[in-house]
Image (cartoon, rainbow, N blue to C red; front, side):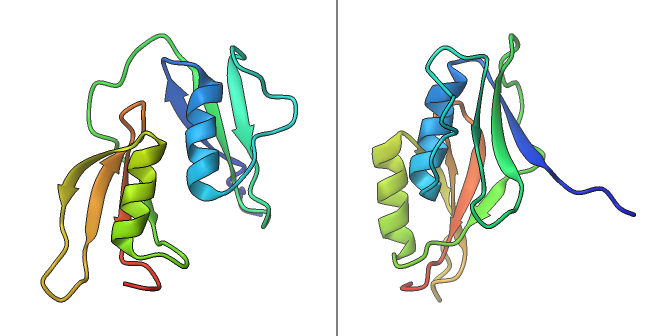
Length: 124
């Protein structure tokens, strides 16, 4: 029997609740009912039963590029619309790797500096 990935954990130096709110809004998933600002951790469940996202306060800050990150594919939006939405929620764009044929991705960071990519969406 093989293990199951239960959570994907984000270390954060700020309030875990704030970072969880960003990811909850970006992914359209609510925070756990018992999470509150100032808690040492916050959690977002996957309604489809996949791994949840766990945000945990740590003392040390991020010092290097992430070794693992999310590649997000927009649903019902273009890549450009999803990037604009992510920026409005507090993300920052790092690099545009869009190719002339429309393939590729845009590299972004969340408010704590964790990288993620936005690929071409269903609408382009």
